[in-house]
Length: 336
View 1 (cartoon, helix red, strand yellow):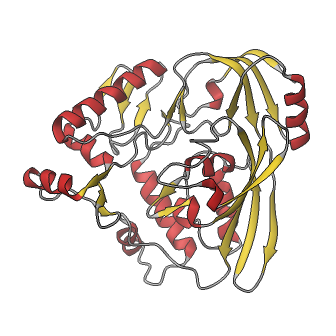
View 2: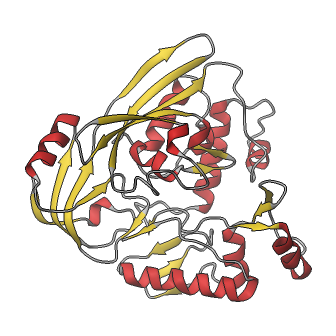
């Protein structure tokens, strides 16, 4: 059922008040097909968990809230299991499902906000792991034809926080399910990125399991990142910039302890949070728009900030970081 002039405040983790010209929740492929057949005039706006967007105005479109649920074991053998999750499944709940079944590969991605369907679009990642490392395929509804198309990992053209769904195929498909190939045994643990190893030591864990790694990641995230149910935010607002090593060497002249991660022979990644904090914006607040007190990478809505106020703050931060370091930081959040 399509609803008109519908509030989206409960459907975005920033808690921004904005209205959709029309709104429809779909809980199955058949419902999606019905809504698409009946909509002959309005442009579409696809909504998942609402965790990676900042609304700056009302949405003059038919907002389709994809709330299709279900998890299925597609294939399993001695070494691997393929699990397919529908787009509307909460991402963290799905990760916990895999851990409860001793399936390895997603533990570093614990507690990331949002739903399963948006993960391949953004190629979400954390602590040295990205979706591309374990996603086998995803199924997507082609808006122009109504066909369901299967995209392999290679077809998604993944890169850092990017995919074909943000590029050449932007607004052409609706993800309806995602399948992952996960390990049943001999799990490969990724504990060398960030402070996971330190957290495991704090937990007094010497031989960690995938569940231990997940618990460490959750503890780290909870210590740094605000709960969107308590303070409006979308997690990391900016991408970590990748720069040439000569840029790093220039920064090191004034900041010899600048943190960085080697990407390849030519590029390194400098944490955007460090750049923002060193520029002086950690804990900054103007009205109800601010930067989180524990993690400078997170822009927050303390209650009544507008989307424009948050965008203005983010752009100010970008200007000041560039003025100080000569490094451009790019928003990870989709600004609507």
